[in-house]
Image (cartoon, rainbow, N blue to C red; front, side, top):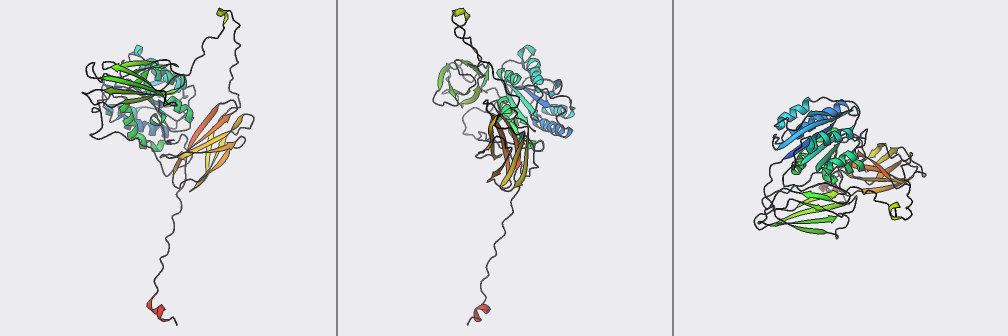
Amino acid sequence: MRLSLSLQPVLACPCPQAYKLGRLQGRNSRGPPASAPRGDLMFLLDSSASVSHYEFSRVREFVGQLVAPLPLDTGALRASLVHVGSRPYTEFSFGQHSSGKAAQDAVLASAQRMGDTHTGLALAYAKEQLFAEAAGARPGVPKVLVWVTDGGSSDPVGPPMQELKDLGVTVFIVSTGRGNFLELSAAASAPAEKHLHFVDVDDLHIILQELRGSILDAMRPQQLHATEITSSGFRLAWPPLLTADAGYYVLELVPSAQPGAARRQQLPGNATDWTWAGLDPDTDYDAALVPESNVHLLRPQHLRVRTRPGEAGPRVGGPESGAAPVPTQPVALPAPEEAGPERIVISHARPRSLRVSWAPALGAAAALGYHVQFGPLEGGAAQRVEVPAGRNCTTLQGLAPGTAYLVTVTAAFRSGRESALSAKACTPDGPRPRPRPVPRAPTLGAASREP
């Protein structure tokens, strides 16, 4: 399991860490030189009152540094900035700035909007006013959303975010505060380890180059992408890489949990899309596009896509068939007492241990217990501790000194639901070992005194 930075700053940490993705480089790698990025890039900035003025200034500086080196051009790569508040506010729209420096100046000059954190409303606004073709969006170009948030929202985020991803928008999320790890992982594009970053507001510079590189990769024309995602299928599209007389494509689709159940389709070299149907709902699929040609050396492209949750079909034996209707089961709504962890506190930090506590604590009537998962932020094996219901603390042992950890507390309810909250913790440096005294060789004088 790969872990990144924290959702909730709970401890001043002297050892900020961040993982970095390796990139294919070198003259021997297959494929043509990287083409110029093209598409529409939108920054969604949490500008509500839940963010302090200091945090907003640091995030604003980070977004400015992120956009400054980008090769913006009104005809190729365009950028926009939208604020999240009580109402969405467009700081600048696509095509308004024709250089990264101009966009950076506009970002740094923007003011915090304050108000409520209506992220869902801002996402719906982005779809209708910026990303939809009916609103003037350019068809056939990559679309990327970078959402910088403190982790919370006053309205639902999942449905409007899924609608954007169904349009083919690639979603990157940078969380600088508290938040639900599972919900943010679902909101980001798959795989989450590439599109989701958790980092303290003072450590944003750690992910600057990596995130910018990932954004540019997502906006290059040869990028394989998915659109029209439903519960039973999706459409894959890609720019022309071959011609009808210069080769062919092999498409492969594999359920992530069933590597042996692969489906393959061969397409002519002038094909630019294919629709997969008959898939399982709410399932991750790994898609691969393999260009085969004796003229061009093109490396395969890979993409992970998750189908939408299934919808209830028609009832079997309904009134039309004359059979007795099948009795329906009432929908189980979450019980009011099913409140997951809302606050995590890290205390008693030692070089090799620390204490984790959370609130509220649920009794055995509502919860089966808690899972506490922890692992180093820079990568490595994660460990898990089980805590029974009714308790709200545990001590994590066997840690490494001077190391940052991501700690996730998950409440498991009797209804089958789970709710999680994550926080960063850091162990202090251990005492340095004292140097061992070097024994001195006996002197000649001492030897002469022996009888």
